Amino acid sequence: MTEIAQTIARLESELALPSGFFDSLKHENDWSFLLKCHALMESACSFLLTAYFNNPSFEDVFSRLEMSDKKKGKVAFLRAAGLIVPEEAKFIVGLSELRNKLIHNIRGVTFEFSEHVSSLDANQRRAFAENFGYAYLNYDKNGRPFSNDMEFVLNNPKSAVFRGIKLILAIIKLQVEANDFRREKEEVQISTYEMMNSLTNPEPCRPENAP
Image 1: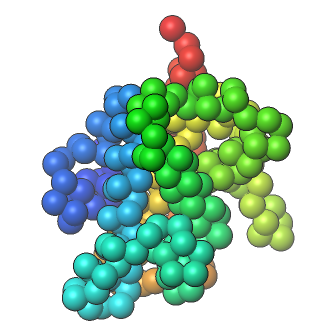
Image 2: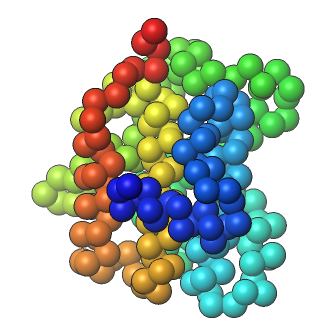
């Protein structure tokens, strides 16, 4: 079991989830996958905020906050406290916005990532790839993020979302375990980079639309 998988397992235990819950999500249909991933991300964000403020009584308060409200949502608190980087915020907000489009219409149960991506225009496809390409980011000499795998994200959107969530969840758990929430610290950046590298260089996987 990789370090990321072990970390996810510990987070599942912390959140009182069945062992292997996260990995099981990739076998769900796309609608169920998206809603359950969002619920898991919400719980993890509340867990991180509660740990950062070191007050268990805040847990219920944070759990009731909307995820992506730019002024008073979970992501707003996480960014203000420096607990997530801009690329993670973009991913989480994108996940939340996509989920919100599905939960208010029963026709959302037929949602499929491949059909969704195919329906997007060029600008929307670029935005989708930028939102959900988090697990495939590299950084230039000036520290600016870029991705050489935009096409992979568009051709394998469910895999991209799954890997991005996996990485963010692992980082959240490690922050809490280390009781170190300063993401700008060099050792924290190195640890994050190592996890990203291990996640983005797996054995080749079959494209989602392969037979």
